[in-house]
Amino acid sequence: MSEQYDEHEQSERVKQWVLKNGSNILTFILLIVAAISAWQWWQGKQNKDTQEAANQYQTFIAAIEKPDVAKATVLGNAFIKNYTKSDFAFLASLRMAKMHLEQGKPELAMSALESAKSVAHNPQQLELLAIRKVQVSVSQANYTQADKQLKAFKPQYYLATYDELQGDLALAKNQTAQAASFYQSALSKLDTAASSRMLIEMKLSEAGGIASKPSEIR
Image (cartoon, rainbow, N blue to C red; front, side):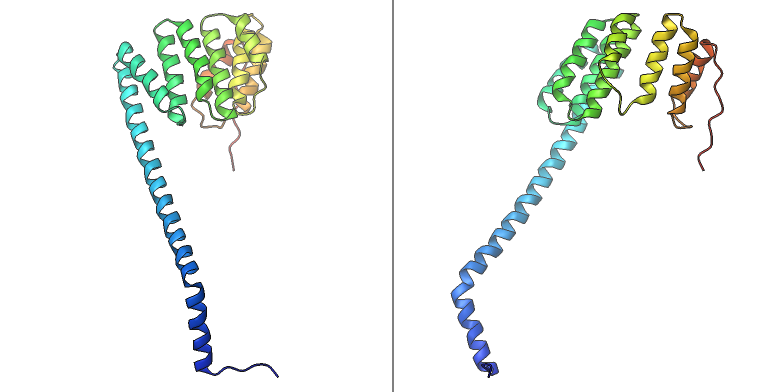
C-alpha cells in the first residue's frame, strides 16, 4: 500500500525541503538575475559603440565629400585603428582607397586596399577587396596586372562585376567579340533594376554587341 499524506504532512515536507534547499534556490535565482543584467549591459554597450562608430564614420565621409583630403586621411586612419572589429572599418578603408584614386594617387589607393585585409571579416568582403584592386589596375591601364589579379581568385559573390572586368580587359586588347561575350554574361547575372546595367550595356555596344531585353521576373 502506498504511503499517504494528509495536507498537513505534505506542507511540512515542503517546509523541510525549502529549509534544506532554500539557499541553493536563492543562489540560482541570483545567478539568473546577474546573467540577465550582464546581457542587458552588454547589449547596451554594443548599441552605444555601434552608434558612436556610425557617427564618426559620417564625420569621416563628410570630410571626403567636402573635400578635405588631409582631414579625411587623419580621420580615416584613426577610425580604422579604433574600430577594427566594426564593419565600418572595412568601408572606411574602401573609401580611403577611392579618395586616393580620385586624387590621382593609385599607389596610395592600392596601399589602402592592402591595409583593408586586416579589417575584412568575411569571404565576401575579401572578394570585394580583390575586385577593387582589379578596378584600380584597370583605371590605370595596367591590364597585365589586372589580368593576374582576376586570375588569382574565383568569384562567388560578385559574378557580374567579375565578368564585366573580364570584358574591360578583352576590350582593352581589341578582342571585341570576347569582350561582348563577357558583357552579355555580366548582364545575364544582374537584376533588371540593377544600377550598373546601363553602363555595361554601353560597354557592350562599344564592343559591337546588342543588349537583349531582360526577361521580366514573374
